[in-house]
Image (tube, rainbow, N blue to C red):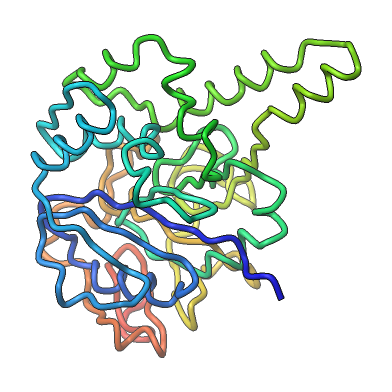
Length: 308
């Protein structure tokens, strides 16, 4: 039987890990057929999962790596600015992704479910770019076929990419702008009506799988039941490698993104984030994940110890 396409998810991460990182790491371990690579200045030796590797370096050293690979001077005054470098990861990390069919990036303010049950071998065969949102390339997780076209898209299309990298501000190149490049490139290739050129151009187009996976509650986009913002599901469970919630009975989720639990910055209705300002959020350990953990407004607990 042919092996499924190989995947490497890249994680440049500097500073300090969030208090739920041990749980996050456990969900990496449970996705044993996906590889994860961290570039970090944080002590990592106790994390020994065979599918999780790391390269020890400072933020400044990572900026030097980016400068070398991109051929321009990259200065990173803070780690958040790395988000603007994500469209260039195929070039920056060309050595690391060699031999992989797909590469991607993600956030650590989440816990993973069973990734392969969503991005199946059949889907990975059919598509070149994957996003867990339908209208942007999701910063918390996007996946790309390891091709020259994907690795070089930003260089070939965006004239002011150096300006965006050099800007002190976060420009958001990894989400709406990045998707717009794919859509524009596809539309520009679709113009010919001559059959042979029409076929050829179609073959050059990027095949995009942009499907809302409902990973991030408390946003203005309608949920499965049509609810928006703070009316979306707030009580979640991780058990047996699967993520569910109290409302969408029988449905699993690829991952649960904590963004709007921990910060009110993106809560469009102005409601407070339940975890913001708390001294402690996580009361569960990886050993609790065998029986399950609950995630809700009061924090992260062993299943059954705290009600939402």
